[in-house]
Length: 123
Image (tube, rainbow, N blue to C red; front, side, top):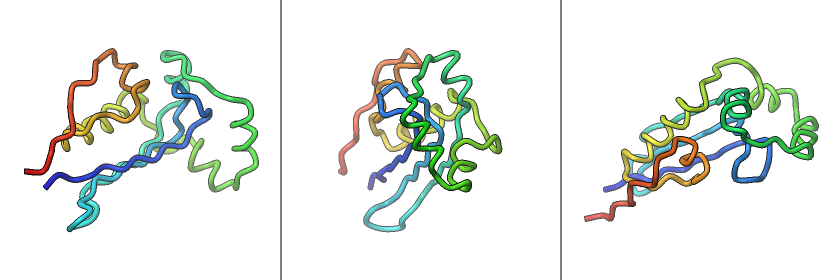
């Protein structure tokens, strides 16, 4: 049976090409064993803005400034940062393992690769 994948991202804008602060992803069996794999990633902001020209919105920054110190540290702290490209490759690999199509076309486009997988059906 195929597993499902759920992804949650915290960002610095609401546009499709926004800077991603955190990515949480879980691969799970909704009808059985629960969580099979978990990713928690914190992509570097500099790589996203300098190389991929991803956006930051002033209103979103203002919203973040009103959050708790713990939330700010989790989203914007320097601990456990990973390169954006490596983080996205890990997410894409997780999706590919289950033969899922990536959810964020703009992120996939950053790697200059077309969509190449389709969701498999249960047999």
